[in-house]
Length: 315
Image (cartoon, rainbow, N blue to C red; front, side, top):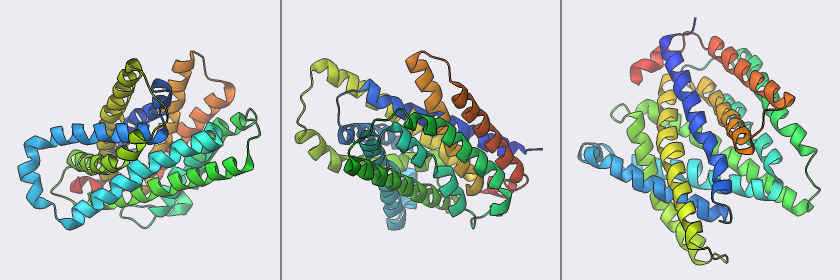
């Protein structure tokens, strides 16, 4: 029987994946803008919204944040937001969506393995069934698409692979360090920590915005800019503010070895949104992928029975 704490943690993690899956629609909604512009625009909007939402509680929070906390926030904003999205966009452009999804789809494995020594973790041998289901689901999603790829320049393919590996490494580091900071910050809520990360990310995005927009070769009409602002603002509110708050809540309720596997739902919901965008039903291999992802989550939750109660007290 899965505890109420675990059930709530699983629910918030799945909802975070539902929010993050929308990120893959941004290039389509703001076609013609470079990855650096999309990254800067999204995180400038994230920082602005976060600052507004933090304003009422700022006097209470400010004295509780020292240099160590602000350094951690800057590092989390760089690795989990700026660097990750830049690498992901580069991987998609240079290596294709299929290759990028296959590499990024390994996040649940890397996060789970990295979190095996954390509080509440279960032995890795008990997690193999869920990890194999997750890898199988990702393979079902990405592998058939590789057949449709045209042979590109080897140098581009290599650079795309390096970008994808960079995105994989940066978000793994973010997930592990963010979970550990949440475990030690009892005076800051999960939502407040998400907003603080947004403020730090917004400051970093200011540095990226200058070269991203000042030296962009393409020129856009007024309607293009309106669509761009609407897209990055929506992504900032839903994917960054709401999605990160839900993820932080799940990180406090669940062991890292379990919450890491919930990243699979970003891929799952991205698929579902893609089906709606393209106006089609999923193919057989895509249905199999979704079934494997669901089986992997259930197997992981059962392997973690009874481990989340201690984490709940700290949440």
